[in-house]
Amino acid sequence: MICAAIFSRYCVYINTHNPYSSLYGNLEIVPQLTQGKDMKEYKTDKVVPRLKIRTGAKRNSTYVYQWSEAGRVRRISLGRVGAMTLMQARTIAREHDATLASGGSPANRQTALRQNATLADVWSAWWADHGSSLKDAKTAQGFYTNHLCEYHNKLLSEISNNAISATHRRITKDGKATTANRVLQLLNQLFRFAMFDDRFDCERNPCEGVRRNTERARKRYLDADERQRFFTVIQQRAPQSPAGAAFLMLLITTGARKSEIANMRWRDLRGDKVVLQKHKTERLGERVIHLSQSALEIIRDLPRTDLDAPIVGIRSPRGFFARCCEDAGIKDFRMHDLRHSFASIGVTAGMTLHEIGELLGHASPQTTKRYAHLMEDAAQQRVNLIGDLLAEKPAGKAAQAAGQAEASAGSHLAVAHQRLIKPSDAV
Image (cartoon, rainbow, N blue to C red; front, side, top):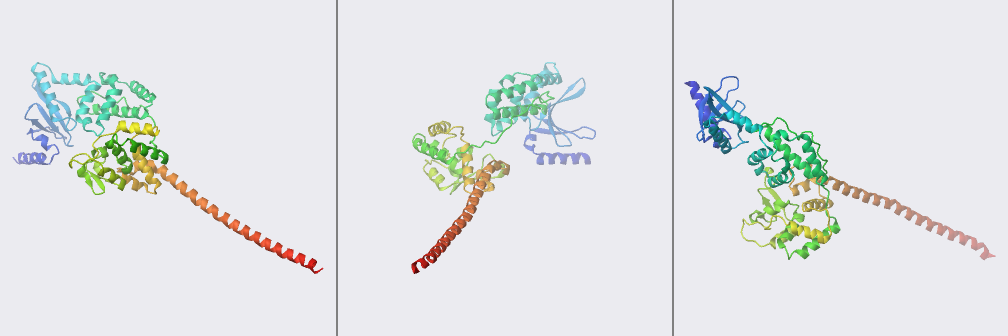
């Protein structure tokens, strides 16, 4: 009786303190414990009774399908809680119910599904569990659709290390070395997901050992002449696209990211700054974008509707930006490079890397170190300036001494001349 009371209180504690408590609201806790060193607790789903959640001593929870076969209780793992949703687990459990009803074995069906899984199956599961919620979800979807289409219907066991290396080399030869690395990174994530998911029979990751391309931080900034031409073209084209011109000018005058400019709402505007709650580095807190006087004037000229409306009103002025670069004669320049140009101007103005990192909203000082070479260039210019000044002073003193010597020599010659002519005058 005492043990039962203790277990009952433990179950209440689990329901109130467990991070999956909202999930467990649909489950009925049953006092079913396995004997042995690792005590395991099973929770039964109210909707699909054969679906269980197994919680071990290490607090790792797994969806389990349980049925009776030849007088024995059998269980198969479906997937980890968190990696698989309750609705997905119920769908799989119902399919196993149908297999049982037709006289089949859920274990055999599970094995067949795991062994015959294709990359498309892994992608669907990964996208539902993780991919669709990522910030760069559209980019990942583009990589999968455009660069991995040859593997969609292949079994996981058929995808070899050599094939992945060939794909990586092909994308690299097309002049997309960085894209090749990103595609390889996505494929690596898919295989790692499959290796730790019970729905797939994947014991190896063929991406391991594929050599990635060496990446160098992009160092493209607008120099003074390019900035002048770029600003002139934007002013000329502003009547055609006021929102596009404002978008680009805010990029270079604030150093903000494209997504931050696009997501700025009028309610986020607070005096001479914009405060964003949702942004790329939101784990660090709110993102404060400081506005210069020119940036404030750009924003004031934009039409204002309601507080929840975006300030600029567009997501990205790609076409407008491309036409401006073409008219200004600027090549090999991306829209994100305007953010780098903002940082380069800050370095030229004498700002420290820490100050620049705060204005750019960098989460790590390592990210800001990409501008360290600009600091070195600026320091070298200052050293050269000091050297020139030091070189001028000795030269000036030497000239002054030479002048004094020449004057002294001149006076001495004059005196000597006087001394020489005096005797002749006397004769």
